[in-house]
Each structure stands twice: as structure tokens, then as C-alpha cells.
Amino acid sequence: MGKRKIKLFMLGLMDRIEQINAILVEKNKYKNKKRISIYNSVNLTKEQVNDTESLYTENYGKKIPLIWHRSYTAYTGNFDKNYVPELLYIPKFERYMNYNSNLANVLEDKNLLYVFAKNAHVKMPKRFLACQEGIFTDINNKTVSLAEAISSVSNIGECFAKPSIGTDSGRGCEVYCFMDGKDRKTGKTCEEIIKELGKNFVMQERLICHKSIKQLYDGSVNTFRIMTYRWHNEIIAAPVIMRIGKGGAYLDNAHAGGMFIALSEDGSLHEKAFTELEDSYVEHPDSKIKFKNYKISLLPKVVETVKNMHYSLPTIGVINWDMTLDEEGNPVLIEANVNGGSIWLFQMAHGCGVFGDKTPEILRWIGKMDKLNYEDRQIHHFGD
Image 1 (cartoon, rainbow, N blue to C red):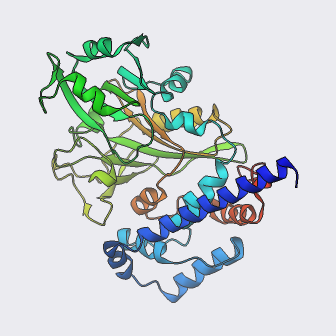
Image 2 (image 1 turned 90 degrees about the horizontal axis):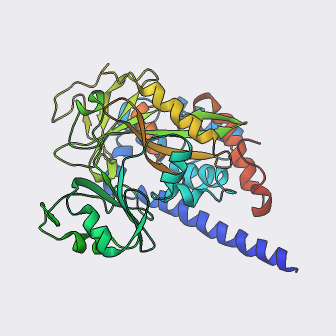
């Protein structure tokens, strides 16, 4: 066996092990007692079961567990045979769509994302201080020493700090208020906090959102989660959701206790917002604003922005964007997530499958990709 074949064999073996692990992660989520009680609260009708099994056997080539269909139906009361189980999204669809992209790690790095955003002419929050592998850069992107880094942020006031790599769901994010070299909240010095943040982080302005977003809840930067995917050389935006903080929290992530809600194409909010484990609200518990028909009219502008950004990254198949609007109504890029997208957010909020009438074709494509070896998968992207 030649060196190239050995290399491909090993890469294929590692890829398969990673995929099996990803599948196990998704299955294990539904061993949670709360999740079990949610999907056990719904029994699908015989017709619903038959419709779902027909869709999957005719297009994917096999049946799939119905716990995801039952869970999503339990959340909204809406059944849709086109629901895509998480079992097929991260381990398969996302994995196959993003196989051959060297840009994935670039987008996942919050510091490197600034370079892309600048070239795409898309705004990001002002960056006061960045650290990449222990090297500091200031607000002017100039390399500075630790002492200069400390001095540069000692009186910036309120800011938001987060790890720039290896984080999700708001883990490691903190709000600080630096005055006279100390954080007013904890009493720690700038030097102590900078050292605690480690070798890879970004410290940025705490953004003030557009009034249409801020009115809902002003304690966090509430963001739109928009999934775009490349299909037959077209960039398609999935139905949009919005994540909103509550209860004094400064994070809007569902895993951090925030809520999420579906939006129509014109920016109108749907009737109910949900938390990760089934709590629902028809109005925000803090602002008391009713969600139904509340409209964020600038949403189409945000969707167009992310589609244009994705067109400039044609080698990436699927991206989950976190966006918001600044005070002036400009779209602002917060994060781009290439690995580990959350399809459940969209399907729980909207009560329908994320791919709509494209579901049969996408299932056929996933089934086709399943049968290919590692080398061949890398040349069959984006619905080809």
C-alpha cells in the first residue's frame, strides 16, 4: 500500500471515528430525563408515523428514530414529517457540507473573523484588545506588550470579553467595567483578568442594539441566528430565529438560560418564545412586550448581509451566523459558527423542518454521501 493510500485510509478511519462520536453525542442528549419526558408527552398518529417513515425510507434509504419528531411536535404542537433529526445534522449534513474547507477554523476564531468581516465590509463590535496565542493587539491592531495591553483597557469602562477559540453557548464570556485599572464588579485588577482570560481572547465594546431589539430586553445583546447553506451554487437562508436574554442575564444563548423565537421573513415575531427545555412565553417576562406580531422590520437587511458574506466563502457549505443590529440599524456580525450548528433551535421555534420542500433531495444527498469513501466525499459537495 502506497503512502497516499495509507494516508487516505488513516484519514478515513479518523473521520469515521469522529462521526460515530458525534452520533453518540446526539443520541446521549436524549437520555436526559427532561428530554425523555418531553418526547414521551406526544404519541404520533399512525398516519404521521407512516408519512415520516415513507419520506425517510424512500429518500434516505432507512428509517430513523422518531424521538426528534416527537420532541419538536411536543414543543409547538406542530407535526412536520420534514423535521430533520439532530442525528443527521451535525454528524452528517454539516460534516459533509464542510468537508473540504480550510476556512472553517478561521471563521471559528473570533479574532480572525475580524479580518474576514473587514474585507466583506460588515461591521463587528469595536475591539479594545485581542490576544492570539499570547500576542496582544490593541484597538488599532498594533502589537503591544502585556504592560501596554493592561494600560490600554484600564479605563475603557464597560466591555465584553470572551474566548476567541474553543468555546460555545456563551461559555467563558464575561462583562467587565474597568475604571482606574480595576473591574468594578469583582474588584480584580486588569492584569489579573487579562491573565485569567488566557492566550486567546477578545475584549470588545458592549454593543447597544437597535431600539426594535433593545425594547424586547436590554440586558443582553439579542442576536439573530441565521443558517445559510450552499445548494446547487445558490446560498439559501433557513427560517430565522432570534435569541433573547431574560432575568438580568447578559447572555442570550439558550444553553445559558435565554429564550429563542421564530421570525417570519418580514421580521414579525411568532407568538411563543421557548427555552431549551420546554418553557414557553407569549410575552417577555421582563419587558412584558407581547411577541405576536412584534416586528423587527430590518431583518431582511440582515439576511441579505449574511447571504452576501456566504457567497464570498463558497468552499464552506453551511454556516450558522449570529447577527444583531446596532443603534443606527446596521447589521453587526457577532460570530460565525461552522462546526456544531444547532438545528433544533430552528425546528423547535418554527414548528417545521428547517429545509422545507428541499428535505427529500437533501436526504437523498446525505444517503449518497454515506456510501462514498472519505476521498470521494470531498469532491461531492453542496448537493452535487
